[in-house]
Length: 173
Image (cartoon, rainbow, N blue to C red; front, side):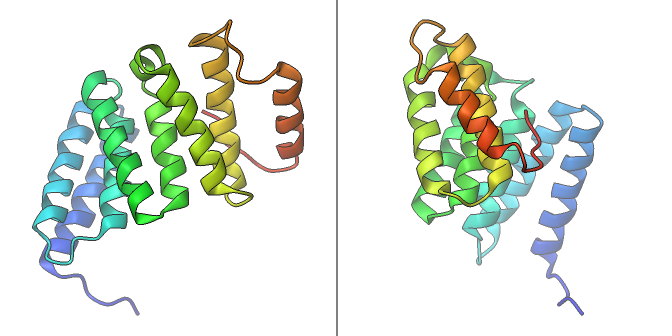
């Protein structure tokens, strides 16, 4: 049986669930406000969990992409930095995906996006194949849109990487 949640933990959980529901309803502004509230609650919690903070920041970056692209880039960067500092490889990968999903990041910070793809790939290693596939799909999009004449790798190399992942069930962006 699960241990009962204290007041702050319960408020964080319910606020986060409400934010996810708002995302599902395509209510990005509502989701962003709720996730900001959940982050404030995590900050108030004496046992402020860095993993929870990184996950909430990543979800906020994903939700805010349609509301405020500048804020989305800032939030995604913070999620990347916190995941990196905490040594959370999978969360680093998710935060990089959230950063790469910001259209303005692809246009204004192509070098940073490319470096983050490389960092996430190294951090993930052979773990988390679905997340690696998602990042490869973002990287292919990046290569086709942000720098079409500055290929990071050839289409043959991309095809080879994707073929290697083909037997794995993957959710692409």
